[in-house]
Length: 62
Image (tube, rainbow, N blue to C red):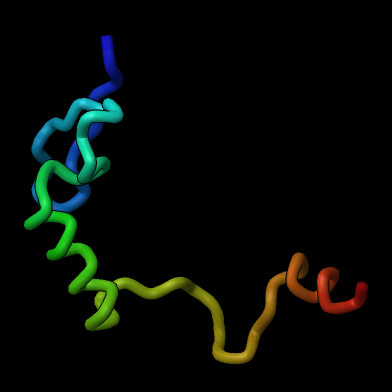
C-alpha cells in the first residue's frame, strides 16, 4: 500500500507513487501555485541578511 500525503497547496490526499509526476502536489496547478508563492516571496527561509550557518562557515574554512 503506497504512502498517502496531503497536497501542500490544497490539502487533497495524494498517493506517494512514482506515477504521480507532481508529488507531493496533486496537480500541475497546485505545483504552480506553490512556485508562484516562492517567486513572490510569500515563503522565506529564516535568518538575518548576511548571516551564515555553522556548516557554511566550516566549509569556507577548508
